Structure formats: structure tokens, C-alpha cells
Image 1 (cartoon, rainbow, N blue to C red):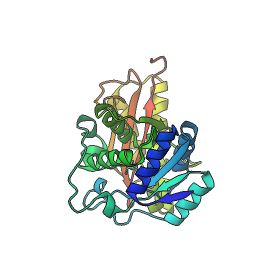
Image 2 (cartoon, rainbow, N blue to C red; image 1 turned 45 degrees about the vertical axis):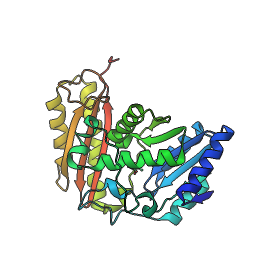
Image 3 (tube, protein in one colour; image 1 turned 120 degrees about the vertical axis):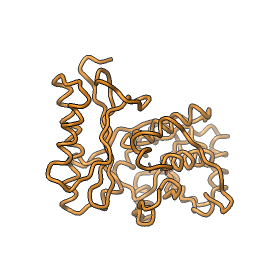
Image 4 (cartoon, rainbow, N blue to C red; image 1 turned 90 degrees about the horizontal axis):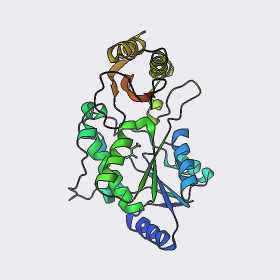
Length: 285
Ligand code: PAF
């Protein structure tokens, strides 16, 4: 596996693959890789000839007081995992080259980024879309794979690609979970043993909501009340949001009559965790 740090080297390699008709797949990450990231790389391998995994802890998507300074990093371990997996390129640009001192251009997707994580992390999605747009310009992928755990991020990037006529296919990959159901995340490393147990309530509350919908419940408030009770029971967890939304527009829904996104974010110890699922009422299209 080749590790590329320079933007121009990455662009030249991408241009020459494109000239040869080689299909490029990109998995953007912030490193500290886990099975979830590796599943995205595996998917990219199915869809492309060359797989590039980018590792870049993007400063512009962290707000003041968030975990940018302590975001976990282990480049050596990441490179080992990607080599083992047969990834072709790790692209690990330097922050000073990605954001030069006179940097001043940002990409903003408006409505989709207002609710959910956008409401509690102002500016976060502008950082995400801007860096992903840069990565698309540098790596020139034909296809790029993103995890559905960051559901709002996925639909936002899809919107950016459509709105800006970017020639990239955006593919979502289902959430990868630990055997006990916790959605994989680099931030799980912030959890101690007890917090790790508390964090299981996120997935448990999603499963409970699925059961409610399967049993015929359609009322938003009734479902959200059970979700909140499940999350808060036993303490040690602070809900940031738990909401039901239209999975395409992320607009509010009055009842769960078709596929509906149940998305949540909660603080457990030092970690802010997110999770989601699609609630699909039986017989809905
Ligand atoms: O999902 C992430 O890890 C990041 O938001 C991404 C897409 C790599 C952009 O920095």
C-alpha cells in the first residue's frame, strides 16, 4: 500500500488512473479506524479498481469546545489495518496544505443541515461538505462510500453532489455494530466500562421503537416518549436530541406512516454518540 501525503501527488496519481480508465473508490475517514471503516473500504473494493482511504482529522468540522484536540489518532495502526485489507492508497494530507493561511472557501448545504446534529453543532456540516468537496477534487473518485451511522452527513453529501453536479456516485453503507449492538465509532474509545454499558441504550431504544412500530404504533410523541425513557432510565446519559424525520428531506413528520428516520445523539461521559434507524411500518411502500 502506498501512503500519499502531498495533494499534488494524489491529484497526479488520480489523473493518470482516470486516463487509463481505472475506476477510483474513495472512503473519507478521520482515522482511528475500526471495523465500520473497514467495511466501507471493502464496499469500495467491490465498486472500484483502486481504493483510496483518506485519513484527515478535519479541523473545520469541530466547534469550539469539541474534541478536535483529543480526537484519537494512531496512523501506524491505521496503515497496518489498511495494508492488511489490501487498500491501495492511504491519502493523509497535512492540515497546513489542506487549509493554507489564506483559505476562505466553504460549501454549504442549507436546509438539510439545519436540524438534528446541525442544530447542536453549528458550522459542523459546512466543515464536512467543504472538506469532502476538497477530497473529491483531489482524489477524483468515481464512487465514494459513507456510513449510514452519520445519516444526516450522508444525505447532505448526496445533496451537495447533486446540487453542484459533481461526477461522483455516493454510496451509503449500513451501520456496523459491535456484537452487543453499540454502533462502531472512533469516539467509543472515550467510554469507560460503565459508560460503555450505558451507551448500549441507544441501540436498545432504536430496537424498542422498531417493535412499537411493528406492533402498530404510529404516533410520533408516543414513540419518542418510549425512546427518551429507555435512554434516560438508569441515568448517566444526557440526550442531545431524539427525533423522527423524513429520511429524504429530514423534515418533521406528524405520524410514522412510511419509512421514517429515528435519529438520536446523546452524551455519555466525554463522548457524544449518535445512532439511527429507519422505522418501516409493515406494508409501507
Ligand atoms: O465521517 C467522517 O469521519 C467525517 O465527517 C468525514 C466524512 C471523513 C469528513 O471529515
